[in-house]
Image (cartoon, rainbow, N blue to C red; front, side):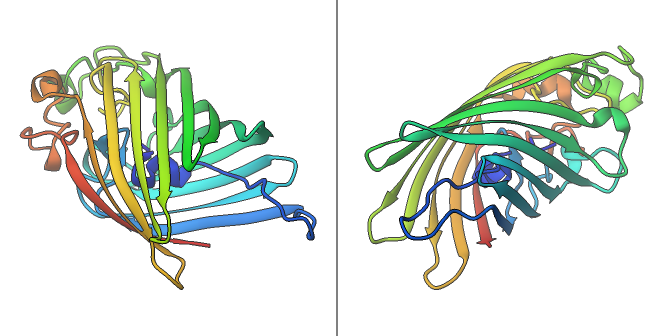
Length: 283
């Protein structure tokens, strides 16, 4: 699942951000199309690997109207914990409305998480709201995403053993999920480098969904990221390096095994600290 992410761009790559800046001589365009495609060494969504700690290819496109209305889509390959028995792919559909407020902006919308070829009850919708602004040279963003009760978020399995045996503990169970986050970034003058930081808090069901995964694996946890992006001169490319981690311990996640490990072999954790590298081309 876009378990966005963000990160490294995760939800950053997927977040739709229509532009409001305009110069004094040219009228704003009616419609603006932006997008990106890139490679990331590990697809982490809210600190948890969705690509089995392997390379992921990701890309998205956003179409924004000058009124502030936008639609978009974003996709990534999946592996291990993040898969749903289908094409091992996540496809997100995004729609929202972004308006300037003071020196910043308010952005409200929703993301529909889809897994082509997978089970219908693993798809879910998550509305969000974001407030962005600046403090001197620093860009700030605070966000909240709340997914109402849905089967994809319910504790169908109470532990990894039940999941491994294919025995549902609570068929058709539903639950909700809350995610709060904050981002900070700032460009270093004349260098092409932007430093960034992220912290997030997840709260949801403590259990496994209909295909043995969960948006909040241990029910409640924190994730964070520290990194930097470098815009390569005369190219549309951005090179990113970041360290991502969570406060999910091996002891806390033991009941999720064997799913919650690389190769799903029951050893280690896919939520531990790791350095991520990405190369993204924007258009």
